[in-house]
Image 1: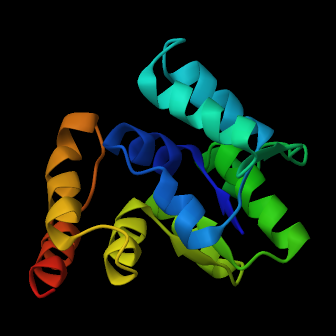
Image 2 (image 1 turned 180 degrees about the vertical axis):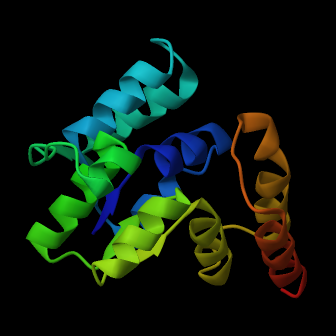
Length: 166
């Protein structure tokens, strides 16, 4: 089981590889704030929203009530309500792995003793577990900029090199 933030869900759905989450982690839990971002971030009927709604109907993505977002403080001022709920739920449920792409949210997760995994990590794990080929993962990485996904160039190069060695 993994707790997920919005970006990895939407990006993997757009790439056509949302099912990697089910195959790698079994169940995906999302707090209400994440689900609201999913629904408000894409117009109704967009393919990625339909794919995510189907996963919820199938039961392997579960939306759960998130804790109230705290009054603005240092952390909650710099993270989205969805990211704050992911971190709070993970700590409350003693979940160790969280699905986050945002660098600040990932640093906060590490500070709480959690292990963040992002979209790139999911693609790498998918290759390592023979759920997709290195070529398929590389094609996904090449599509990320067109999807509006921002990633550190050096990190992207490292991941591409790692895939190239497979």
